[in-house]
Amino acid sequence: MSRSIETSKKLFKEAQNYIPGGVNSPVRAFKAVGGDPLFISSAKGAFMYDEDGNAYYDLINSWGPMILGHAHPEIETAVRNAIGNSLSFGAPNSKEVDIARLIIDMVPSIEKVRMVNSGTEATMSAIRLARGYTNRNKIIKMEGCYHGHGDSFLIAAGSGAMTLGTPNSPGVTQGTANDTLTVPFNDLDSVDKLISEVGDDIAAIILEPVAGNMGCVLPKEGYLKGLRERCDKHGIVLIFDEVMTGFRLAQGGAQEVFNVMPDLTTLGKIIGGGMPVGAYGGKKEIMEFVAPTGPVYQAGTLSGNPVAMAAGMAMLSQLKENPDVYAKLASLTEKLHNGLQAVNDKLNLPYTINRLGSMISIFFTDREVIDLETAKTCDTGLFGKYFQAMLEEGVYLPPAQFETWFLSYSLTEGDIDKIITAHENAIKKILK
Ligand code: PMP
Image 1 (cartoon, rainbow, N blue to C red):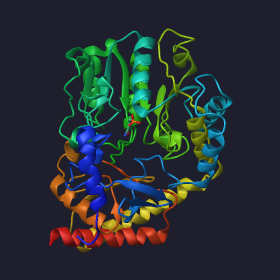
Image 2: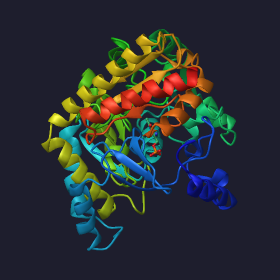
Image 3: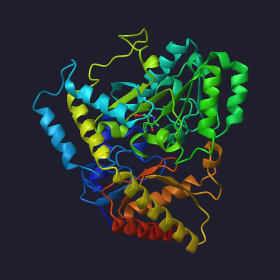
Image 4: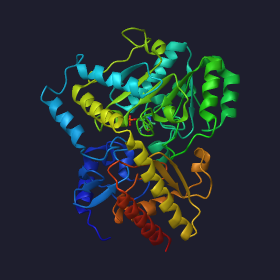
């Protein structure tokens, strides 16, 4: 190994004395890929720096939020200005109104929105609301989709839960598990079957419209529209979990790209510009069911926090004022895709690459990846080796096969060339 990561190693050892597994979110422990996790000291633009001073191209970008790159000057200035007026009020503030107005303007199906503190809170609140609104109990989720760590969602969950082999978590009661029905992603027949069995007790169908938590998996032609039609027919609330895709695939997220409108949308990540923020919103009629206008309770001491709102507002304003962001991100990602594919073709490697906008995954399988079953055909051991080899090449990828890479606007075409070269070097090294 050419670089030293001694400080990270020491910190990880110490962290394990105080924090379960040494980390505050499981995937960070690098369990799926082996080796010690890196402790990050700073990040700027397209780069992250670890505690030993090594630099890496960051293709995680805080799992999505840093779409404009790290330490963006406008966002940092907005936060600095907000800090001067106290960190929290626990009372209404004008920035909440500004960001709500902007979200409603940017996301086509949202007529009213409530701010929360994470993606998990957003999805938990959205299904409670769907249940309260419909007076029904069950939800349908898609296998391999991840919606945060709320009890109802830890059934056939993707992301870290799947990577760590715990898609169904202990600690979730049987009663809760029974109310979550799962079907494969991209499979309308299975949805029809469930609806014919228990249709009048299904409150909501929730899904990532473009899945990012089993790697990047795109909806088949007509899939989202088919779900919309079924929800309309059976009085089911359609929830798009756009925590990942919101403000990433387009200003209006996947619903804008595919022109299918959900009843409720959950948001997170980019909406906070790097601060802990989430939101859920949708049709006025449904959102009016939330307290204090309606009977469905949901609250938060720090919700609408003025510093977090300032960061989010600055981020969303940047995205709105620079509409070329999405075209540039898509073209950088296409260049990366073509480059990875060219290397794979040259080396006769049949791996599958899925991409949309600035989300991309390389799957170590020769199968087309359309759902959890096909994603699971990947050689995860080989991915682990690849991940380590890429780190050595100075590229920080999500530390699991079943995650999506996120590109940032601060990458240049030259950076993409370097990442493609890193890929070629890494692949040759692990296949030697
Ligand atoms: N939904 C989706 C689609 C996600 O990708 C995530 C997080 N990766 C969540 C919900 C949960 O968000 P958080 O980690 O902020 O609770």
